[in-house]
Length: 357
Ligand SMILES: Cc1cc2nc3c(=O)[nH]c(=O)nc-3n(C[C@H](O)[C@H](O)[C@H](O)COP(=O)(O)O)c2cc1C
Image (cartoon, rainbow, N blue to C red):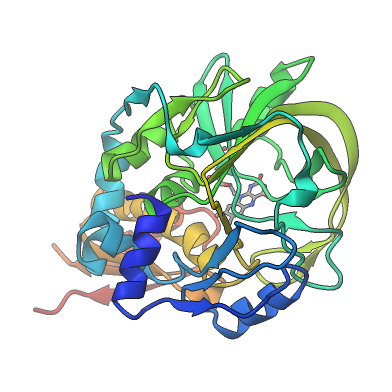
């Protein structure tokens, strides 16, 4: 389901708040998003950006993923575990909505990239899913926050040893990369997963729900066709200062020398919707925590019967997990707790809960 269709469904269900008054992406949108954290919002009057809309909060609740996947909230962990275990390669279309408009004269100033907080290093893309191709492992998609530094360049936070970083190190020249923005919820969820190297997250997304792809215009990459906006370009070996910007915990992350992403072509839908994800907000928390639940679920199921896992916002959706089991014998609670730590290395508190019928 495309993002715009999903937002219409939320609106029909009375779950989306639409703002029709003029709103600036410079701080004003973020302050409204923060006040409504947990709720989907849509800004459709951005005075300096005619034709654009800004959406936020559409993956701020687990029920948003369940709605897209047509399942119950409690079934999400099994759905994610099944998709991870059996990725399904998607079809590649010859034309796609994300290429309705093709701009070869790049000007990032025409895109409503928000500023969230006065201390931020600059305007930030926070829900950009980067697609790259690794010569040894194939396609990888993952989130990288990107700070605008000029009208055709951004600087990305490329965490060491993850998919994009590994591929970038192999390229002495420039690594072709496409940043997709305004994606359906299930594609965001798959992009936030860390399957073993060589496993394609777009195929995981397609195992969750249909995720057609299309070939990028300038890069040898097949990208999610239902993106609202795509920045095609190259991740260079030129470095500049990235940050500061808040991390998942809401603490200000410092500055680092990071690679520059040079945009060579922009493609988008007519009247594109830009996804503004609030750092440390509920969307950020869900997308960080939920993808770790199926790995805990699989690890605990190796030692006993696991019936549910939730990574909770109290631990910033990264550090605390609640695991539900149906004990098969004495000592299963301890075994489950140990297994949960193997399933997600960063948790420091696991609470177990006996399944009661
Ligand atoms: C909202 C959000 C923002 C993220 N920002 C970054 C980031 O700026 N840099 C980064 O390297 N990882 C970031 N991540 C984490 C990666 O997307 C995530 O670890 C991904 O699973 C890595 O996949 P890979 O190991 O297959 O490359 C972010 C994740 C989310 C959900």
